[in-house]
Length: 254
Image (cartoon, rainbow, N blue to C red; front, side, top):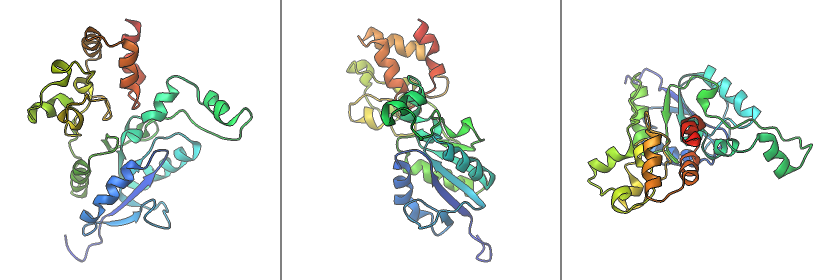
């Protein structure tokens, strides 16, 4: 990169979320600073104004009216918009709650009736605006984040795998906890990217990366029910991180 050219500008912004993704990015920001100029970063800078940039990373779901206003402005001021983390990609636990109860009922239960609190049904970013790259995870994987950023800085849309976690288990030669330990592992229907963290230590995958491509939900439910797990428990685990309810319609009718 020529020293006469300005550094690419990136921004990091937060909506409604736990900020776990911000910590991952912050811990790895030193690897990017020689190559980019950071215009905005929550907790790390005093002012976080929205201005035109090359790449914007957004964590958190759209759960409040001001989230939507901010997201719309961010989309209009960036070339690439990257949804980071399950809140931004799937809606996460906020969306899971909305699958079972209306927003107004939740507001009334927590704040009382006639509360001035305003909220929207929690939704991922692409429910409202075009998203260029989706990085699942709760939180995201640092290596994947750096690889995606490197590709975008070269004006290339990166490939982000949505193959199941089972693929990563095979590559690491892990024993299958679903078959060998009869654990309720969701690896067959969960997107890879975590490096099979849980199965690698003998624990069941609980779906924190969101659904893989074309998840075989019926087969997953059949296998788990054969092992003694109830359908409600299976659905609860699958929806805990905001996986779309549409995936489970046929299961609930079966």
